[in-house]
Length: 399
Image (cartoon, rainbow, N blue to C red; front, top):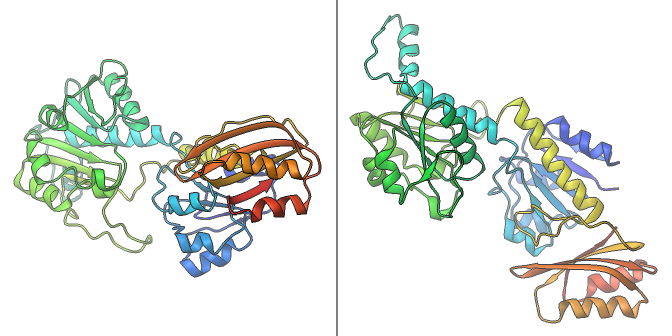
C-alpha cells in the first residue's frame, strides 16, 4: 500500500479521492517544512502532495528513493526540480484547470474596482472624506481588455469580460483560437497601445522575465490599468511604481510578487505599499473554497490513476501514456534511458524469464522512455531485480 504524504493543508477532497480508491496510509502536514524536516517526513513515502511553498530539489529527490510520484496541488510546478524528477523516473502532476474561474473572477473584479477608483474612494471614506466626484471613474462597458497569455485562465477571462460589454484583444506566443468576439493583437506592443486594462497570464521563466518593464509600460495608454495574477517575475516593480507615481498608469493590481513573504506574519516588501490606486493581494488568485476542492480532487485523481494503472497523461515532465485497461496478469512500469535498442533489451529480459507480453505501450520524452507492459507469467523478485539492475533501467515497478 502506497504511503501518501500531503503538505500545506491540501483540501480534504484529495484524501476522499485516495480513500475511495483504497489508499488509507495518508499523513498530512498543515504547512511547508524546511529541507531537513521535509526529507524526514518523506522517508518511505511513495506519493508526495505539495503546494507552492514546498520545494523538492534534486538532493531531496535523490535522498528519498521510495518516492514514485509528485502531485502539485496548484498550477505552478517551479517548486519542483522537474528534470531531476524525470531522471529518477518520477512523474509530476499539477492542476492546470481547477482554479481558472477563481482567478478570472478576481481579475475582472479588480478591473471594475480600479476603473471606478474604488480603492481610493474606500480609503478616503475610512479617513473621514466624503468624495463623490466622478472624475477618473469609468464603466467597464466599451473598454478594451488586453489579455497577455490566452491559455486556460486568459480565455476564461475573455468570455466573462465580453459578457460585461468589454472589447477583448489578446496576445500569445502560440496561435490560439479566439473565443466569442475576441481577436488576436499582432504584437504585444499593439495590444498595450490599444488596451484600457492589461492583464497578464503567462508562465514564469526567462522568456517572460520583466516583459512589463519601463519600455513596455510606457507603451500602455495613459490612464490605463495593469493587472498581474500570473508570476511575480513578469513585472518590473520599480518601473511600475514610477509609472503609477507619474500618473501614466491610473492603477494596478498585483496578486504575485518577485519575492513573497515566507509566512503570514512576514510583511511584503514593496515600493507599492501604501499607494491608494494599487490593489495588493497575497497570492490568492486561486484561493477559493471551490477551487481548492476542485484542485484536491483533480490532482488526487491523477495520482490514483498513476498508482493503479501507470497512467501519466497530464504529467508536466514525463512521457504521457493514457489510461490503458490491464490486459495481463501483471503490469510492469519501466522507465529507461532513451537509447537505441532499449525496448528490445527490455523485451529480451522478460522473455528470458518466461514472460509473455500481452500488451505494450511506449512513449519517450527527452532523455527517458516510459513503457507499460502487461504480461502473463510469474513476475517474482528475481525478475524485478533483473529488470531494475540492468544499466538501461531508470526505474521499474509492477502493479
